[in-house]
Length: 209
Image 1 (cartoon, rainbow, N blue to C red):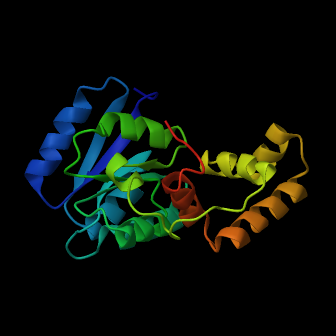
Image 2 (cartoon, rainbow, N blue to C red):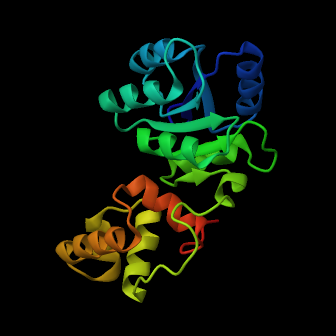
Image 3 (cartoon, rainbow, N blue to C red):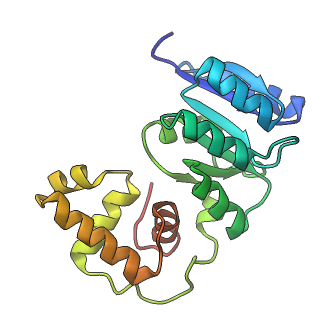
């Protein structure tokens, strides 16, 4: 039991939560430890249950999923949050990742399996629904202007690795990696890691599987 991924389901529709629970109960490595119907309850249960991952609806009564995500991660930064939404627009994706969510999938999507998404997020990946990933680039079309080395660093950033881990992988100093990271963000006009990850994936600079 201790090896199972503990999940908290947050959605204001009981039928939706029931459907998610049934899907997850079929997975041997996942256990649903609780359910919440709004953002306030989500924050409370996150503190009580300390789940590894929270499946969080964006639009919730009393407190939005975005606000709940921020509050939960302020207290428990190790918690993984997979955001669910009806919206594929850039603005929603930006806000979710900026709030700290580790994934964003659409409720209407049939080609993104919930169980697989949960496993990937817990493994350290940033998971975006394929429909979202194919959307318009954050900064428009055009070449990135990044060097081969910067692209190597970018790929590892998207993989969720720290500067220290990237330094080890590429046989560089951590300071050099930090400089590359700063140069990448400056070249792309992006100043937040979450937006950098989304841009890299959508623009095709980095391929994810």
